[in-house]
Length: 174
Length: 256
Image 1 (cartoon, rainbow over the protein chains, first blue to last red):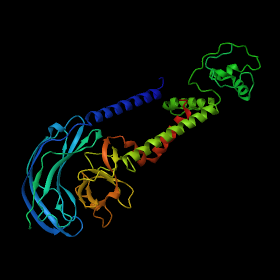
Image 2 (image 1 turned 120 degrees about the vertical axis):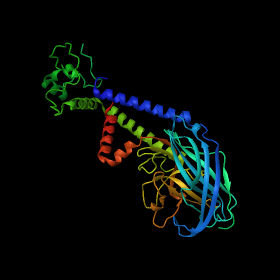
Image 3 (image 1 turned 45 degrees about the horizontal axis):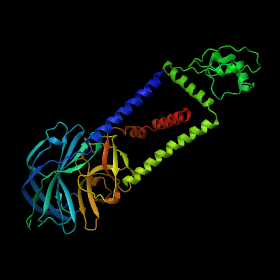
Image 4 (image 1 turned 90 degrees about the vertical axis):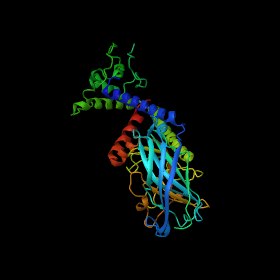
């Protein structure tokens, strides 16, 4: 320990091991937490059209419009290891063509420090709700769920679904 | 008795006047930096007396006139001289041992990597985020742990790392839409969090959906900042060669 270089070397090695231990500590203390919170979803208006899908393959597909409300309190999810929450509202349904379809209609990033209480009313969807084909017409069972992806400072990236769903159905014509 | 203070174990047999000894004597004992040379009274002509303890960091006067033009690097120059001394004093067996040690380290690292590949089922279980398209979740230089197990179906909202046909750089984005048929065939669409539009502009010409075969893995764990070293090494290849060279030098030359 009598040269600058060997001192720097051992200092560097020590700080590296301390940081690694801290990171592991962050990960292990929050790895098994349950990050689910009750959520209330309400759909106020829905509409259906059949147009050419301009976002993708140019075929005539069903396009849905939904206006919704969300009420959720996400405060309990945030702890020392959560950097942000990526919330997304997804619609899940099945059609004749495809056994399972899931479409994200709206998403939002909630950073640490932002207001964790969500009280959104009359939100329009961010992304176009195109179906792959014409399966929305007359579809009785479309489930809306709010889920979130917990992005930690270091550790596991879990996908959690809010408990509480919204369900809606479309009438049989446009 | 002969001086035994800091004589290295495998020095030339003290009884024989070898070429090395004779040259050392000719150099006048090199200001006391070679203690073994004290034992070079092979001819018995010099009386045995206590030699001063070897002083470190004083280079021999005549042999290597290493004058570093920049004073701060003098320490480094002297250190490198130390290492060369170490190398000189190692005999063949120790050299082989060092090489074998190095080989062991390399092969255990390789085993761990391949083991990880098997456990996660992904061909590249650890990736570094290269672009800023997933900010603020992932920045450039973050490390992601991937799994690619067949039993886990791809669902909306998951972060997938995929490769577009014809391009070799994998992309880390989030799944926006999936359409799965009865037989399990899935087609899906992705979008980066920080991008305004979905990824159809990035796909191949005429390709509208991604399929399971394009997926390298799904992100399950995340460690920040560690991958910056990889990005540096990619952007500045000279840095990479310098690091590899120094590492190899240290491992081979150090006794431990």
